[in-house]
Length: 551
Ligand code: GLC
Image (cartoon, rainbow, N blue to C red; front, side):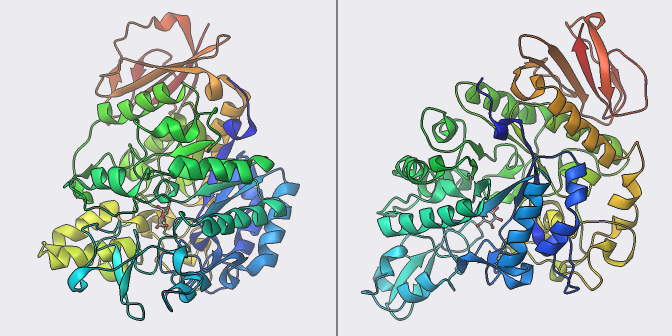
């Protein structure tokens, strides 16, 4: 296995809006990140990925960019960013930016021009289609609900937007568009940025004829019509050749529609495309045919099999990303752990899981203190455009809205976007005025300050586990072998790099259990666990995890 810094890194993801406000306007900002750099450094992470901070009307909180080279004044402007980058580098931290290249904001100059006339030089920067009788040109549904086509008065045709109508999709067929994006990458790479997380990169190549989807299952539509288009690999190879390869950058492509059938094509080291992708096989594990609000049950076997199958695939020449949450999904402890009786323990168990799997590990802000889902009493408390559009659609479909609010509690992206809980003072120490999104009411018990000096806290467990991973490269590169694959409570695996072997066993359930295994526990010595129990064998308390080493 070839070593690389980005394989050995642990990445901390920041959602700047919700991290720390220093100006008192209720919005997090870059100076807030600067203020917390010692905190970040003390987590022992290597890389910080910050969600978009560019100029934006914030229809989708920065994922609608109106100027790729300007940092929004709200966040502190370009000078704040330059300072952040310098301070991070001084501390030995690397900075990864979000590159949103599938679409721009409708306020971007390119789109403002493009919509003027059919002959405007920027017209071909976007996708246009006319239709008979003024109806949408095809039956595609936006990822946030409603049709993907919006009518443009002046030219009397439609433009494509796979997300909101304020996020028109760029036309990558146009070589000028590609050069513009490569220039943006160059601009930030020349400043010294260390990498890019590429937003919905799997969507950039379109099927030019825009055929109707034949599928009822939304994931099938995404995979076969929106994502993995005919020229996707041509574009990624071109971008790599023309820009990425000229720098020492880390790249991770986010990818709806990326799955086991096509995942390796994006990341195989011989292909010269991306270092890693974020696939969503575990993140949409509970999404039914109609999408994430069509919630279906899943069990531990489904969950394990995602990790097993991806490891099998990627060991053929790729590299994976290991994550259990981000700004688009509910909180990992609420979703995959237990945010009630076993909150602390399950948060630690999931930390141990993340930090002992093969791949680059991504930790989302707040997960290191076990932040949980929020359940606002009313839809009016929610901000996320996806949640609000789903709500509207449910209303139009005549759904029972009390039931739908419960689904929102489970699935809304705002679960992950509530302000970071720094301490128990008003607004959780995030801001001294009313935050843009209401703080989770549990901030008095779950916050950084209360965990900072507590050796048994979730926070200190993360700090310690991250260090442990870094001191044991076997956990980064070693082979992964799942044991007792179909066990309903236990997630167990070996990590072996030819020199050492770790055995990691998690009881991912609320019941105690003795793991009856073919593995001889006398060959293993217990190194770490997430509870105070000193039991050294295969007996597990609820949500107990253990790391053993073969002796
Ligand atoms: C990605 C982002 C998400 C955003 C969407 C559209 O999925 O992570 O937050 O809404 O792309 O840019």
